[in-house]
Image (tube, rainbow, N blue to C red):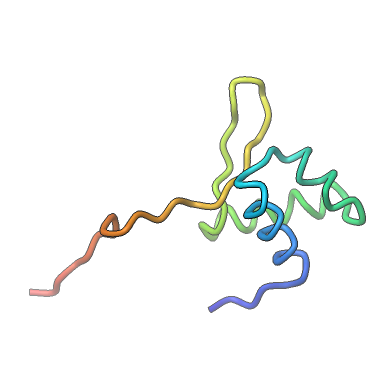
Length: 79
């Protein structure tokens, strides 16, 4: 299990509380962090599958937690 930094925890907490938000709103809610700090951490979290980043029709990047549905995981059985 990867260790979370305070920045990671704050970003994940903010996204969870808002049930998803755009990158600018997230950056504004974490006003003591620079846009670059937030962007780099969101990028890392996205690559690890901890958040999903999508582009909406207005050109904003939306960040949300991935949806995990029970039974949706693929299970592989070794022969």
